[in-house]
Image (cartoon, rainbow, N blue to C red; front, side, top):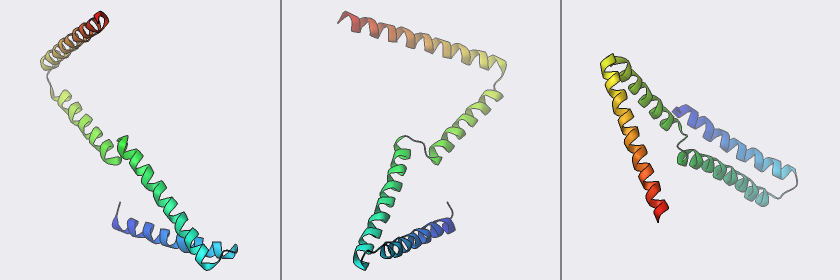
Length: 116
């Protein structure tokens, strides 16, 4: 986000608070009650915005995490494209061996859990 965008958003929130205050006065609230309720509305909006940020943060669904995943995938793809067919075959063998080892250890764990 650019600096001007942040300034525009802050100015928009400031204007929204003023509009809410004026509308509440138009609908019959006193100046003090209109001020309290406009602040309450702005705080509810702020809490809502922060909660969406926290959800995106904990689910790692933020722009930074997506860019990082895209970069990692691009690096892996480039490395795979640069490998010779022999190197690819060797890598495939290693992956298959690791899968076999992992499957056998998983099977042994299940068997030991069944015996208990």
